[in-house]
Amino acid sequence: MPDRTPHAIPAPIAEMLMPMARRLVLHRRGSTVWQVHTERGEYAVKLGYSIEATAEWAAREWTARAPAREGVVLHDLGVGDVSYGAWEHGTWNVQPWHPGESLYDRWKPHRTGEATTEPDLREALSCAETLADLHSKGWVHGDVQPAHFILGPAKASLIDLALAHGGTIPERYAFPFTGCLVHYEAPEISQSVLNTGEAVPTTKADSYALGASLFISATGWRAVAYPDDASREEQRQAVVDGPHRPVNVPGILGKLIEQMLNPSPDDRPTPAEVCDALKAEL
Ligand SMILES: Nc1ncnc2c1ncn2[C@@H]1O[C@H](COP(=O)(O)OP(=O)(O)O)[C@@H](O)[C@H]1O
Ligand SMILES: [Mg+2]
Image 1 (tube, rainbow, N blue to C red):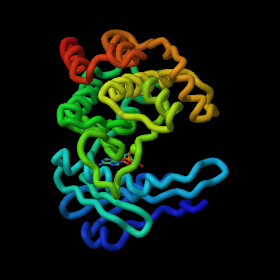
Image 2 (image 1 turned 90 degrees about the vertical axis):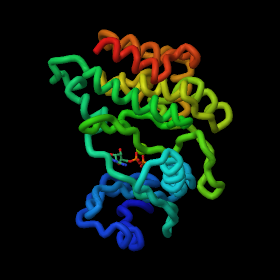
Image 3 (image 1 turned 180 degrees about the horizontal axis):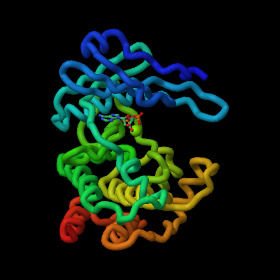
Image 4 (image 1 turned 60 degrees about the vertical axis):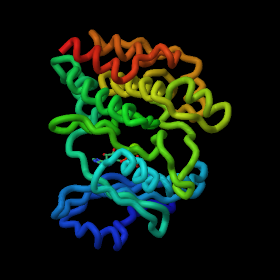
């Protein structure tokens, strides 16, 4: 396996940040993420690299470009204290660390049966707000999933903008959108990926992914049923064929999830509409 050992933070980045402490957050196919503590604050350091084909996986080149592409998006969005560039095996970015817990982790008690209350509507609202905010700035996320919502002390943040669409991306960092994690992929995206290998992310597909994210976080269920060992193609075909699982989440949250999972993109509420509906209940 070529990427068994996590990549260390390259020397020029370490010299720039002067980390006082560092923690490996994840190391997986094409991506290594570090959390670093510096005098100026906490940062995420993301290292991307291409992956070679194995018996199990096709080769992937775009993972090498993803961090710099995300850096471009973060700059366009006006996020401060972001830098990016190239390193030996691909590209990197440094961005402010968002303290908190992911939506998926926060709602774990609802999946294990330990919770005595329903999922917190204010937390659902924070997630919808950060997505609505992104859309209002002219960007589509493209990879909305429960691990990408970080519930902080005051608000939620939406991380991993490597696949976002909206502004101009320099050619050297660009790559086609070939879908996202299928559990959160809207049927029209899955259909397009099955047909052509590519798709165009949209705000409407982000709405679907928000619904699927809230649903799986609250219940543990994927929006559409398929076997754990189904291939990507089989997963996508199941999403296209539908229907989605019955939404067994009570109250307004369940109603909104059902609407966001609507197979017809035009009939899904926008994240801003989801916010309005949630606010009306609080
Ligand atoms: N800015 C950040 N603030 C807090 N956590 C982050 C940040 N960036 C990445 N992470 C953590 O690292 C994980 C992987 O980061 P992500 O941006 O999703 O990279 P990948 O491209 O590998 O999916 C996230 O799920 C989160 O736990
Ligand atoms: Mg990610």
